Length: 101
Image 1: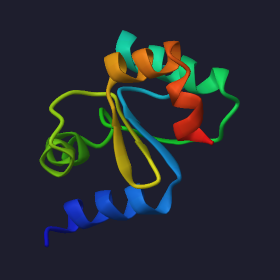
Image 2: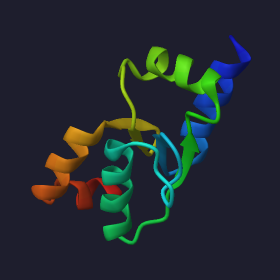
Image 3: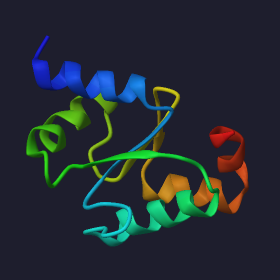
Image 4: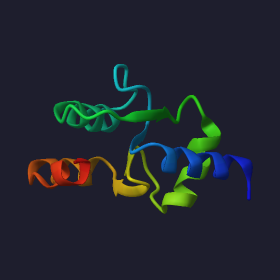
C-alpha cells in the first residue's frame, strides 16, 4: 500500500473527529471549509484537522479513499460523514449532534 494512503487511513482511524479542509479552522482558505469549521465549533467538540493545501499528496489521494471528490471532508469514528452541504443539512436537522456525541 502506498505510504501516503496508509498515513491518511491512520489519521482517519486515530482521530475521533477529523476534518480535511483548505486552511485551518482559525484561518480557513475557502468558504465551505470555514462553514464546516464554524459548525463544529458550535458543538464545542474537539476535532483535529488537516490542511490539504499544505499537504498536496493528501489532497490528491484522499478522494480515492473516501470516494468523495471535494473538500472539506469530515470523518467521525473512521467514517466519512460528508462535505459542506451534508454537514450543514445535518446541523440544521440536529442530526449532527447525534453523530458527534
